[in-house]
Image 1 (spheres, one colour):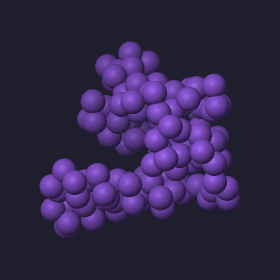
Image 2 (cartoon, helix red, strand yellow):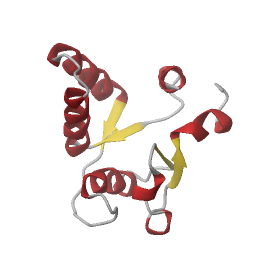
Image 3 (spheres, helix red, strand yellow):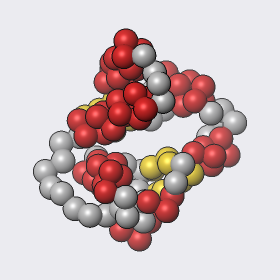
Image 4 (spheres, helix red, strand yellow):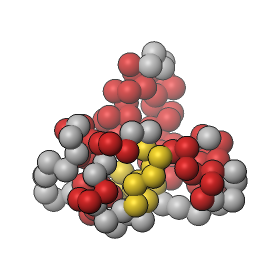
Length: 113
């Protein structure tokens, strides 16, 4: 699955939106998974190179998981078309303009499946 995202990004088929809060969440998750600090830095730098930073000037409780509010707000302020997630329950489609998709749906929607 990740190889598809990487290939798709290489061909500039999508724009990865992020905020500083999202980068902090990525760092925390990678650390929890036991990734070495030097590798975490490389991953974060690669994401920064490929992504577009979104400035979010509001706060809101959109998700039932407060940590996912950063992703919801980034999608809304960045005018995202899609949000890919492993847990769609935390991304209420009725409260978001972006289409919420499970990561497993990625391959069926795009040519790299």
